Image 1: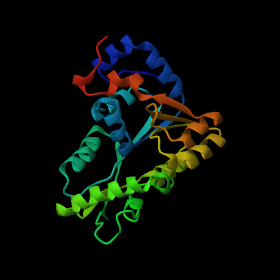
Image 2 (image 1 turned 180 degrees about the vertical axis):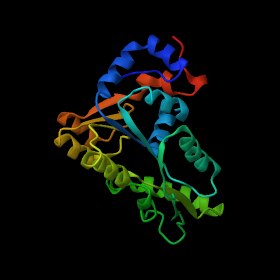
Image 3 (image 1 turned 120 degrees about the vertical axis):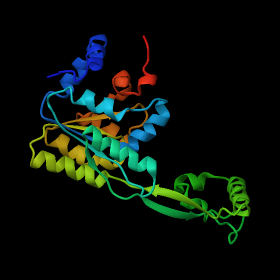
Length: 248
């Protein structure tokens, strides 16, 4: 079941045999993996180490029951970093699925509102929290925005590109048409609660590869139905950048 693709992986597997045994139990049947890379990027900032796409692919390819590894990430036309990530993923052999990132211009122009008005702030702060803020706090935040306006900054950009619909659809199609038994989702987004719940109710194994405190409460609740959460920090040395490997 586990056949290390490189000498490096073989050495690490001998050093961390318990990790390999745990993963062999997870990948015990026909398995597909779905990587929501926008989520993974946010994890990296929290973890303070980064995932090497080539090392990750080599490691996952070492498990014979893994059928396909699907990689989802948005494309920003003209952005070299965005395009480089997609190019690298394709070169490594992932099944890459992408679509344009929506770039929205959000106004922060407070010139036409009163200092204590939450009108502009409600575009950035969720209503339950905004209602809890004191008038002084709203006035302070509006003053900060006014200072930005005086510098000529009237808008900020917000990037949006969710793959919850595409990933959820692919998981259900793979179940119905491709007879996949195990579904490995690299994400902690609440939008996946419905398809994950459906798969669990149909008796399929679903495992989240995520990191502590980065899993939505809706998904945490599904642990009662059999959802398993695997902390990716357990396999850091197998998948991180070479210079970030921990010595022991």
